Length: 112
Length: 113
Image (cartoon, rainbow over all chains, first blue to last red; front, side, top):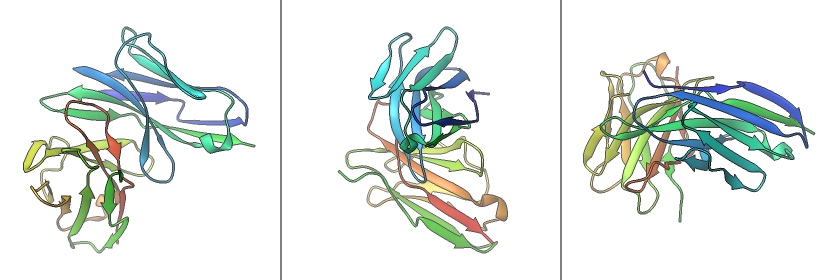
């Protein structure tokens, strides 16, 4: 069975800290790995990674994929209270048709 | 360009009633996906549809659940004879062809009394 595991499940830090969120996966027919940010409503797309070792960056957020060791990390530097959210990792798989397999999420809380 | 639209945002049903959840994909997107999120759990794939076709329904319960994406109008997820265990947030996502990037709607929170 395809599996995506995120760690930690919950993280509380102070504003200004740097955090690293982890995502490991065990799937057949890997196509891509995606990160989403979920606040009170819709998960918002952050990154999609398909190749190992190439860092994707957007402002204070960055992410990298290791297809040999089957994991990805999401880094957030100089955290702000607005970064508080659940961060979801998902792996795109092809099993006749494409779909996303999600991890359980990391709940990040940034305290002022 | 409006995002993925879902309605209603909140739906309350009594056990045994039917629930209909609607999803309008982003303009230009022909692929629709439905996911369910139970409390304190990640999103679980239910079904993937293109216009007038169900492509993959491997995550859909075999009974009481059905989905459609007609030629005209929104995609509909239908749950017949709801039970308390159906209470969850149901998210719809859409994508253009040949990409894994799915864009999510705000979800419908279904509560079964």
